[in-house]
Image (tube, rainbow over all chains, first blue to last red):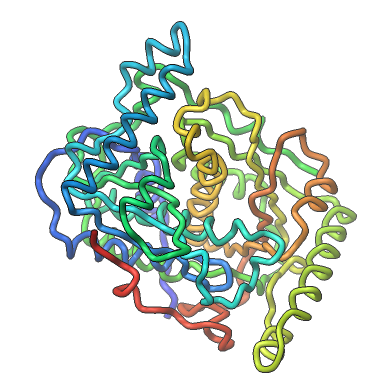
Length: 211
Length: 211
């Protein structure tokens, strides 16, 4: 029997989407591994091109490896800061862009670009859909985590090749995202980048065309 | 006041994720434009790198343009079929891979690769995160649509350059997805590609490593 979703559920789902944040301020309380793996089970029911299921998850527990990732972030962040001037430079310098040091859980998410699962269906003219499938799993994970009271942050300010080397993963795995998870220290409806005047939400209406 | 999500909501959310399907069998009933645009409002609360909000949506209403997209699909699909042999060829030939002819709503989703929104934050070492942001919006749309009783299918078997030309969108817009939406003719817990023996779900456990 297929489930029915009523107006109350839809309102709660909307709240879930609106209150999901890119979290960079974590409490240090540990999160049991089983709780994260239960979230990954839900995430792995995301759509994937040709049912290719290319997502691969790596729990990064080793302090040495975490330190190498933090170094990659610090280097890339300093380089990025140097590219801004004036007011943007001042704002950027004060932004907290990752919670790598505090987050109890580090999770690297890869696409197995060499997978034969799905036999290439749907990928021939748009091969990027393999990575897009992994992103769909990540957004599903983000929402599932928020519903479970766990905050998540996506760190893209790092050298993906260096991080991949550090994590010693099988040949052909391509880093899609490096994630931090843990209990959030704060909860907000507005994005951190809006609260700290980096950017604001733009109106959707002009972004929807008809042809 | 930040919302609380209880176990009942989490169970329903899990059902939502599990019962989301890539729909190719649509009823022809029209869907009011406002209902789709309300879903897009929720989708546009997806995460985006640096709050860049690069998603751009195009309702494809013109019969001529829809016909051109169907032609691109048919060509790409024939080409893909020719690449399979034996049992895979036989199965592929019988799969229904798109509902372009029946779906009342055609929605093309682009990334505005030239947007200045977000000022490039987070994109310097991983520029692909701009497109990934659009994918996060698409997965959010997919779940919001399913909760509202609307099925969605993602058609990647087409020539993205040809479809972009046909849709006459602003310079710098890059096609991320071509979507069909409408009331589903059937509802299933198992993916169509599994039901028709193209591929099966794989166990998650071996896909989760620790480093």
